[in-house]
Every structure is written in C-alpha cells, then in structure tokens.
Length: 369
Image (cartoon, rainbow, N blue to C red; front, side):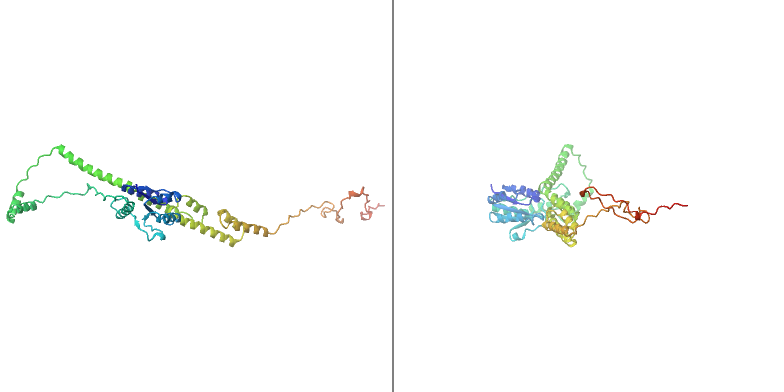
C-alpha cells in the first residue's frame, strides 16, 4: 500500500489527524505524529508523498523546516497551508495548497486539488467525485400544476389545432361557476406514511450536518478557540516580569512562543544594562536573582566581588574604660589633683610601702587657748 507522510508541529496534531482521515479515503497509508529525527526520516524515505502542514504556529519552526528540506530529495513534497499561513521562504517555489476555511467538505476546491496531487504521485485511484448533497426538507414549497401547457402540447402531437382563446375563457368561467366537488376524507393510514417519510428526511439532513461538523471540520473550531485563548493569555503577561514570561513559555504558548522568548531576552539585556548603570552590589544581586543562568551572570558575580573589595575597611570601635574614683576629677575632694595610680610590678618581689607625703596633707587644727 502506498504511504503518505504528514510533517507537522506538535501544536497542529488535531488538524493533521483530520487531514489524515480524509486522505485514507484514497486507500493510502498515512504516517503522522512522528517527532523530528531518525524515525521521521526513515518514514519519508519509504513514502511516495510527503505533506508539510504549515500554520502560524509552525512556519517559524527551524527544526521542522530542516525535516521538510530532507524530504524534498526523497519524495514528492506538497505544502498544505492553514489559517492564512505562508510556507517558509525556502519553500515559496514549491507546490502549495491553501486549506484556509476548510471544514472537511468533500466539494472544497483546494482539498480536491490536494487529493488529486497525492493520488497521482502515490499511484492510487483518484477519489470519487463529491456526493451530491441530500435534498433538504426545509423551504421547498410545492408548485401548482400547469394544465394549459400539457393540453396544448397534446393537441400539437395529435395534429389538432389549439382551442381558440374565447372557448378556453368560456370553459374556465364555467369551471369557476360550477360548485367544487366535495373531496372525500382520505384514510389515516396513507396520510401517516407521507408524514413519517417527510420527518425522516428532516432527521437525516440534521444527522448529516452534525456528522460533517464533528468529523470533518470540528478540529477547525477547536484550533480557533485554542488560538484565541492563547492570544488572551499572552496579552495578560507582563513584559517586565521574568517569572511571568517563563511561566507562559512553560505552558502552551502556541504561535506566541517566539515573541515570548524575544521579550524574555530583551528583559534580560535591559536588566543587565540597568545594573551596569547603577554599578552597585544591590543592582547586580537583583539581576542575578531574576536571571541566575544568564550569559552575563559571570560578569555580574565578578563585579560584585570587585565592589566588595573596594569598600573601605571599618576599624572596630575602641571601648572606653570608665575612670576609677582616684582618677575621676568629679569624685575627688576640692584641691586634690587627679593622679593615676600605677599598677604594682610583681615581677621584682615585694614592693616597698611609701608613707604618705605630709606636705600634701592639710594643716591640723591648732589648739585654742
């Protein structure tokens, strides 16, 4: 059995599955959901046709573009475009089909073109023409039978002349003047059949519409809603908050991945420039707190070490020893100078006791006569 490989981004898995279901109608084996690498390239080598699926979420994926370049030399490559996306510049000259707006209809012209390209290169029978749409049970009023024209045609076939106009007018007037015949009441059994059949036509039409919406085009609505939710989440992310940008990238950024990565890189460079301008330890530490794995982290840590070495050394404060009562001038009697008593030297044996100097003593009271 001929095989067809669909190269797509992980974010486009749902539309790739829907496209594969339609291609399997051509009796081909469809290979998809293969990550870039050796497994995908082996599948491309053994396939007759490769379809590159491009969307706003994947046309900037360089790794995906490399796999498509490899496939160009191994099989027939066609590009399927979704949501008004364009193929990368390297593939602008290749054959591409714009599937924007396709919801799985068999009669959609770009889909029929892609199906014909695949079946022709894969060597399988083309898809049958799209089935006609079933008649709808809505808005189909009945038409009154025209009696004049068949009668004139019957007369012409029999070789008779058409009835003169006055005779026809007289006959119509007679029919109008005559009382209409009373119609017999129809039996219930015949009536129940047509009513039931008409209801079945309406139910079949509704079922057909629901199946077409869920099977062929339901993925389109899902991708549109997912893209809208991702855009709303991106609009609410602060461009000056590194943690918020990292949380957004860790989730499902979709088509805003490249824009979020650029915003985070710009914030990193801007933060480092601000730290250089401030040239303080606090500024460089704040930068390292937000971007510990930055390419500027080594320079920031070195600058912090230089700033710390350049700070003046602070001498420890000297402790003031309180004065004793013999040296504190506030505690001595008036007229006594403050002296400092030297500490006794115990290294040379016992110290001699020096008697007090009597010249410095105040005179004793003289006896009175």
